[in-house]
Image 1 (cartoon, helix red, strand yellow):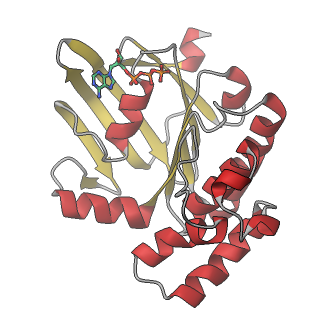
Image 2: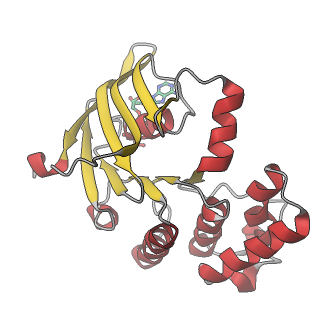
Length: 229
Ligand SMILES: Nc1ncnc2c1ncn2[C@@H]1O[C@H](COP(=O)(O)OP(=O)(O)OP(=O)(O)O)[C@@H](O)[C@H]1O
């Protein structure tokens, strides 16, 4: 088992129920700076709930989560959303780009939300679109680009603020295998270049192969992949 020595993000003893459904039942994991971690497991095992807890989107019923040594659960909503805007990036299965904005405006948006001036935000967004090789799409709306292109724009948007952790929930789930591979290559390369950690939820071994480490979630509990294989 490869346990990071100084975790950037760590959760332990995490429990979360939705009514009678026990989504997390004692899950634990830790992520070091720059670590690319895949969370695997069958449908309904609790992967997304675990990611949402670690990202401060869902509050667990019990357990502890620390980010950079600070207690994430004890933070008030304002502090937690500030943390999400400045320290975390997100990529979801269906991109979730804002349909009314151009691809460039979508990538610039996280910077605008933290007070960066338009010109500066758009210059940075242009750089990131070029890194993801979709700079030709800057003026187009998300509805006018392919699924693979939209996910590359979503990766650019996730990384534009220089996050310390990128949370990716089935980022290739809606793509064919070739486009999925391309998105994974670009996401992991960009994360390595910027020393961002990646917490990746996937049920596809081919996608998990891009990670440094894999953990399995079974019935809301985490199991080290190497012990399962
Ligand atoms: N907001 C919610 N309300 C009610 N039940 C929920 C909610 N979110 C998750 N659950 C339930 O919790 C369990 C774990 O769900 P979760 O989405 O974390 O699993 P998953 O491993 O990510 O599944 P999948 O691979 O299908 O996305 C499931 O039984 C799910 O139906």
